[in-house]
Length: 436
Ligand code: FCB
Image 1 (spheres, rainbow, N blue to C red):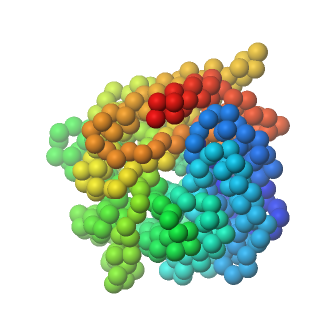
Image 2 (tube, protein in one colour):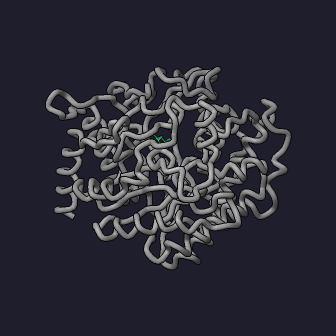
Image 3 (cartoon, rainbow, N blue to C red):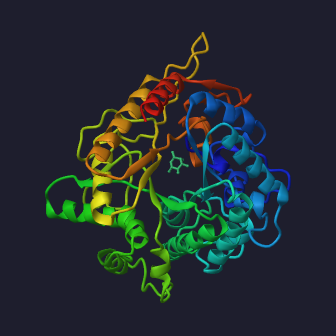
């Protein structure tokens, strides 16, 4: 199971500072406010019990930086650390291994006020925060994810401005992306020191792409899209630096004049040896000339005809997951891969009897688990799979309109109702664990 702090916790209390997403919410930039979301801050025991009933053996959650360091650096808010400490204890008591993500996009607003990720000093702030959390929880948390989906934070947050902090500037975006990656590399060592014997990785999002046709301009557009969306992050994490073709292309398009924010030694830091690569997979895309920076939905996907679309408008494309995993194994040779997110938004709600028949989610999960299995059979070192998500939560700017949960949440009361997919997944997990 996977989740993130801002999307489920609520609880702007007990000394928590504001993050850029709290501010984005206060500014009315989200379809629904983020103040309460799933009230997990108060209902966390109930949520752990749900996961115990589900029978999963691992839970990926994120830590809200502003709960621990309300101003981003300096003063530690013990109540924030205590919240996660109790959660971790409860998980362990239920046989659920905690996987803690340090950054799922919720930068302290105090750091944003000082320039945010485009500023290099934010890297030091992140490592300070990482060390504090690592020391506080590292005796019990042995699996760490530094960052979630740096592409989203970089491009949606700083280039397109549709996500917090809402900046629209290529140069700041690429600086932000570099500092996110640099802070990843630096914190790998910090976490290993603070949490001896732990495994450390990063969760990268991906959009496998195929050209819309064999026309050279579509092939070139697809190559560009792959660089913009995938390689810009995968390559440096695996020691290949930023892709030359993209550096040139960004220059030609006037996105940057130089990469002068990349200082000597940075690329070595970013290439820190990781124990596992997390991959978040939802869909793939077909790219045609002129659309090489577009993720517009409704585009028919490439390698396979879609098995329908989820309510995010994302095509259901399981075979592209297999292909992408095999590609990552061949191109980057990660020691281990975990699918750190996979899931589907369908808005089915309770019927008169209170049951939620979300058959399409069951089919989506079934197809993708099978696709992952096929990849593993082809030698991909796949060692885990996290469903996004346990609860219907706040889907960022889309608010509550998108429901990804195996558990239905009535957002007016907070009541949780397991969906059919919950019972299906429970049986599936039981059969896997029985046979392992
Ligand atoms: C991913 C995010 C996650 C959730 C899913 C649907 O990009 O990491 O928080 O929003 O998409």
